[in-house]
Image (cartoon, rainbow, N blue to C red; front, side, top):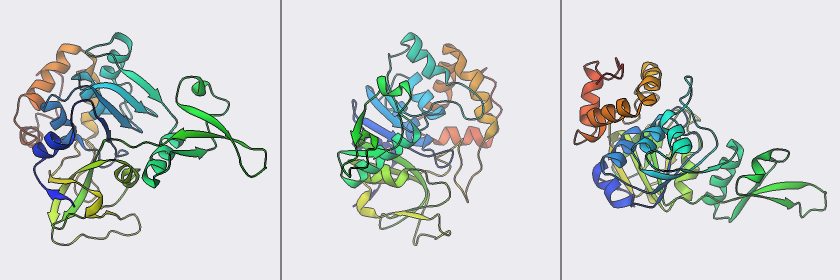
Length: 291
């Protein structure tokens, strides 16, 4: 059953060095605060899994937390490349990064297979691309005598899933709404689940057909971290900080500028609170890289 705890304790207890960690969220509800705590605690040799790695994985890779990345697309959304990711792949800085690349559909199928307790998933895809030569995918003949050849992808069962949501109740149930991506699947597929939420409530709200609930038995630890998805957004609570994403391009291009920014806002402070105070006083959203 889910335990209401601090983010520091949740990461310390459930994200060991060398583990496979999936931090999901598509534009919406990306668990930045949890990623910062992983960096702050100096976690190493992680295999990071995410359908669309963006700025939070750029930060974690740039700080040497990861030795592997399983993904289907990577970039600073609406802006361009992830420069710390590129530096790790092209130059091995600060740590050489092993890549396993899939399609979006392939990653979603892998999570669904993991959540269903199946060894692999099947889809139409990959055929006709050279991706089959560089990643873990196999051809499989349909067993129903229709002559079709499909692609099989191994199930994804991360050691730890980390997601952000709008609410959790005091019994440990988690509620989210809006664009939920594959958060439900990754939670069910993973061996441990950490959730950060905007607030702890007595009763979960329902917000129409896009509302999803993670029952307490699917979750290990819940930490209340308001604005814990910044610079992404939490529908009904916060808005996406487009200025941050634009500023990140300049900050992340240079190793020394990146290192100074991370020390100022992430590794130097004791917790996510300083980051939020910097957001409130305008210093975080007016970034130039000169910190």
